[in-house]
Image (cartoon, rainbow, N blue to C red; front, side):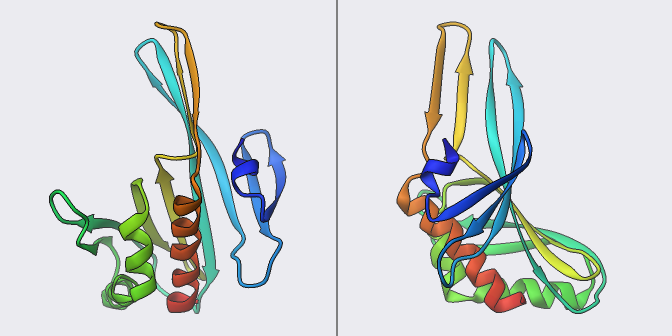
Length: 167
């Protein structure tokens, strides 16, 4: 189902629950998707974890949580460094301050957005509300929550902004 929502990408499956979406057009990012099952009482939710990486010069590892700010309306974006040195925090601040990244996250409905710095790359991990499947036993129900065009554009926009700032 997710492949239908991302028709401008070619899906290459390397495992039944993991694949890579390869861009078919100019300027679009390629990224990975991994299914995770979250069990609940009398059912489960299958969520897709989206991963996007860009190469980077050698640096110290670190990670941060990125979230939107505001009570009832999203009014900004902030990054909270969980682990990392001063250079990591500066890079995170640059990403959060990027106008395109902020616009994308203002629209994106996500549960979790993390930035990871490995020795030679930057990587985001995103858990969206869309592109999920909800399965319940009582009452019996199965529903796919689509990745709507505005959500797809926001996700890809956040990846492209990350590539511009950190790549």
